Image: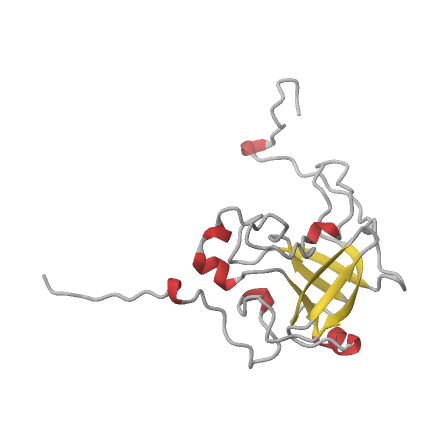
Length: 196
């Protein structure tokens, strides 16, 4: 920032980008926490779902948190599609249904859209991804490092159907028998062309 509090800009009004040498994550895997967590988005929800969670079509397409695992990791841990799993880090834990997907081996994905704010949820099951993440930030940009943490995953109970994850995009299941994502009857639309 210069004296007027406006970001410095380069030629053509573009921001300056600062390069830096690679630095490893402040938290890496260990024997106790052997998997790497990454958090992110689903196409059907936006941030904490304060608006998209109220749209019946979007809520039906991605109604709850899930834990995406690679098939090899899931097999090693005895976890199948839809099983209830616990994910824990040195800071806390969550519970959600497992999606056996195409995430990299050794990596666990959890969407960050879900928390404790849903009025209709009386169970208060911990499901907020940031229960797992570290409290650290980039020293230059001050962006929080919510994208990475070391975790462990354990099966808590057998599933009763597939995870509530969408079947499109990054969360597409390995198992082709999982029914496709749909927004339910509220998402269906028809059109009729009439001559005037």
